Amino acid sequence: MIQRIQSVYLLVVAILSVIVISNPIGSFVGTDNSITEFTNLSLVAQDGTENYKPWALFALQIISAVISLVTIFMYRKRMLQIRFTLFNIILSIGYYATMVTFIFMFKGEATFVPSWIVCLPFIGIVLDWLAIRAIGKDEMLVKAYERLR
Image 1 (tube, helix red, strand yellow):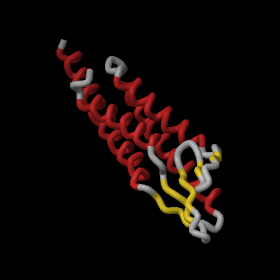
Image 2 (image 1 turned 180 degrees about the horizontal axis):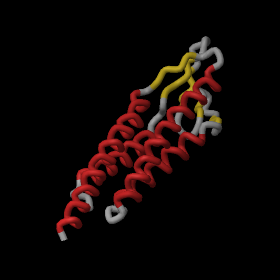
Image 3 (image 1 turned 30 degrees about the vertical axis):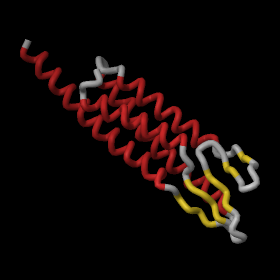
Image 4 (image 1 turned 135 degrees about the vertical axis):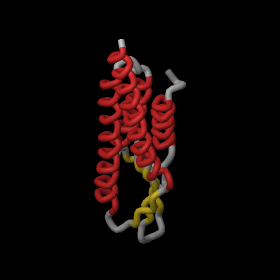
């Protein structure tokens, strides 16, 4: 199960999702040099007040991590595994769309300064695509064996 390369790709995607969840996406720097930290779950102002409006980003990353882990154990149903991985790619693209929407919603007069964490879902998309290719190769190999029987 874990010895297959697509399982490693999917495991790394799940780990990247957890890293994205646990770190801030960036910060908003106001005209008065006030800094508001933008995380996947909340906006944290300098005075410590939290605004939980961006909770959807947190939910998308949790779903992405869970789907990646569940997909690893579907090694006997390769076509379903491909569909789940494709759905995970769509979730990651939706994460970026939701993040951009929240940035424009909360920006106002402030400037958004992104963190390096913003690139990790894109790396997850690339790894998901590589996993789909590897699963497809496994499916072709199994069909070739069945033809020889």
